[in-house]
Image (tube, rainbow, N blue to C red; front, top):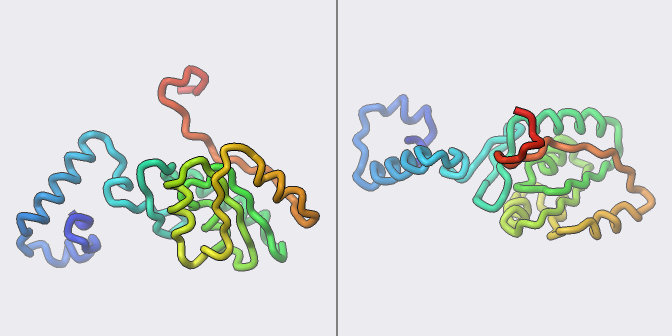
Length: 173
C-alpha cells in the first residue's frame, strides 16, 4: 500500500483515515495481483534493500539476496588495512556487492561484468559510486584477464551462492 501511495509505512500508520483515490486503489490492486502470481515484491516496487542501501531492480537483473550480505561482510574484513583495494565482480547484477564494498572503503575501485545490459544499466546508475565502478558487458573473461595483468592486481576468489534453477537435480533440497 505504501508503494501504491508513494509514501513510507510510517505515513500509512499515522494517516490511516486518509481516503484512497480510485487510481491509488487500482495501483494497489494491480500490485496485489502481481504478488499473487508470485512475482517478487522487489520487482513490484522496483527496489531492494541490501547492506542498508536501496538498489533499483528490474526484470533481467538478479535481485540481491540477504544471505549475500555475508559475502560483503567477509570481503570488508579482508579489505581492512588495504590502501586502495580493487574489486572484481563477475555477474555484477544490480551492483549490490561491488557498490556496498565501495561504500565501506572510499579508496576502493571495482570492475563488474555481466551479460545483462539491464543489470549493467542499473549498476552504472548508482550516482555516488559511478566513477569508481566500471560495469562491462562480458560473457567471457576477457576484461578479467586484462585487469589481472596489471601488476598491482591481487585477487582472492570469493563467490556468492548461485541462483539454482528449480529443476536442477544437482541442487540439494
